[in-house]
Length: 76
Length: 76
Image (cartoon, rainbow over all chains, first blue to last red):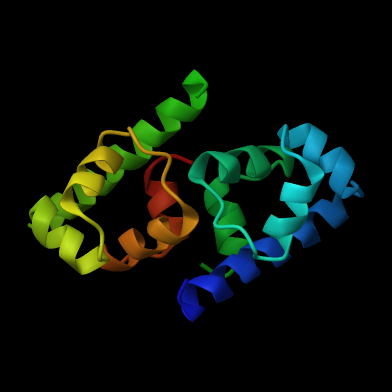
């Protein structure tokens, strides 16, 4: 993967982590809300996974954000 | 895949097709700009592929849109 894409994945992951923190949810509880495994959530938050569109939708819903708003918060 | 996710993929694909049309680009020329194969572009436009985040970024760049704006235009 090229560096700009990796930086964008990291920015998205950092935003997800921050918004999860605002909701005071552990990775485990957040994963349950998204129906995603907590280890996957951890990888996404560290920008290690090229997340799919449908998983972005699940995560945005669990964060109570529009997907476009989540990306905007991540600076994209 | 569940129906809401599929509907969202279709909405995103329809928006990509519409914006590509605005730029008067064929799927082939658009694919070259994104560095994605035209058959993949076609599948994305029909909502048949669960596109990855980094490919959303490539497509948004080729459409000269912010990724958040592309999702907003798709109603998400």
